[in-house]
Image (cartoon, rainbow, N blue to C red; front, side, top):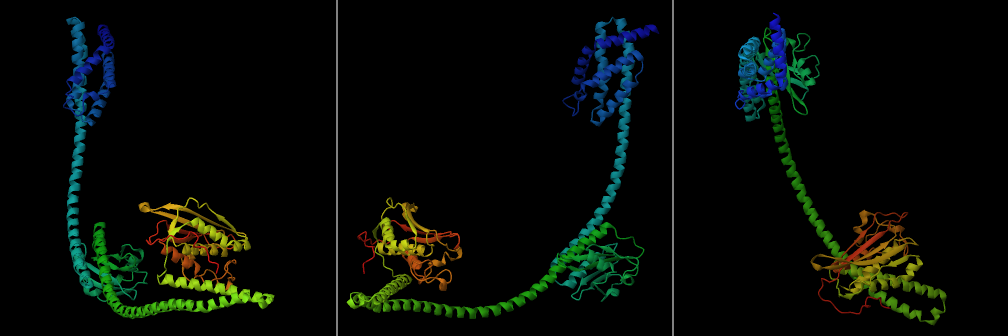
Length: 628
């Protein structure tokens, strides 16, 4: 017995010393024979520590003769590897290849007699390992097969149930398809509801179906009924205000409701039947209720029947609303056609009246322009006489010797000049309206115009204590323009700035060149003031003739006084002259405010080359005002 123990200890010691030699050879051989190329999961995935653990348990079993720990490790190995789809051959090769590797080493290092003794100790343990692996594999396989059998039985039952459900679903889908075809092929409400009720009654679980409609009297009335005892439901009504019925409860909650065994207002009509109400609803209002019934002894409607009836009810709701909409649209179209006929007749009368009004306005416009033109020319002749006789009276010694008469005569002359200026503006407006404004373009210096303009209005600027700031005009090119008319534009813009700028303010005139398309060149002139500004809503209309901002009655008199009055023609004439030159004029201002004075900027853009091809060479000072 002692000799056997010594041999076992020596073998265990030999195995421990040869561990670094045995393990690599064992693992390499196992992987070489494992068929790595043909297997999805291979012994390569048997981690290195598995070899070490088994080898360690083998060494313990050699000494102690106990294999429990080794057996447990092998059984765990089988359970893990079978779950990972390992081939049984790979698992069984695990101890067999170790046996082969150890046999080669033992035969090399031991004498034949000693080698046989060593193998006698090792073979039972290695063979036992193989048996444990086979037994564990059989147990795991048997458990897996039993589990698969249970799963197969369960799947068989589920397939049978699925077949029944499929058959029931097919019948329900066929019924829904029939309902869909019916409701899409007719707009007759009774025919449509009858088809829906007939298809629902065809279901084995439904004995009677009634469809209740909401009426204009706020009641529910049976529209159609199919099935057993359908005659009992004729002309049955139920007020919507009834709170004790499962029908009105379905409409109120917008959910399907079941008939209560006690206390329902319609209990006597349904006579103890199993009944369920499904509301028919549109997006905005209730349309009615679909009610299905079964015999008293029948089982309550299950979820599949409820879902089927719910789907049919939704189709019925859509079809019912479409039919009602069609009826309303038909009636509406009839009313609309009548209203269109009436409105067309009215519009024809309005158009005739509008044409008459337009003709009257056109005639009135021509009359007004003719009146302005005639009045201006007729007033100009006597005004010329008044102006001439006033100049003669100025030289009379009697009048010069009477200060009172000199003052009166001066007022007459000043009033005549003011009236003459208004008449000239009226004539200009008449020419612009008639598109007969004649221009004589010639090379013109904008700088000379502005400086002459400053000299002309120097006294008015001084009286109002207004600072006039002029830009540098020396780099500006000469432009082809009618210098007298352009001077008239600038004069009107400066007078406008003087009138609407409070005393002590400032006015700035500047100009620069602009580059246009196709090598066109333009000059932009800007009149900026620190005045009271112009509201945005008035900025387009101030260029209309006779248009004035504010209350005319509150304006003071005088051409250059603050907010001085006038006929409202200056800006209209300026726009007409600029347009005739092929230019553009506009104003910019944030707002009208007499406290903060945001100011205004009038922009005038003129082409350097005039679109009028008759260009006359005139004196650059021909725009200066004449002495008379």
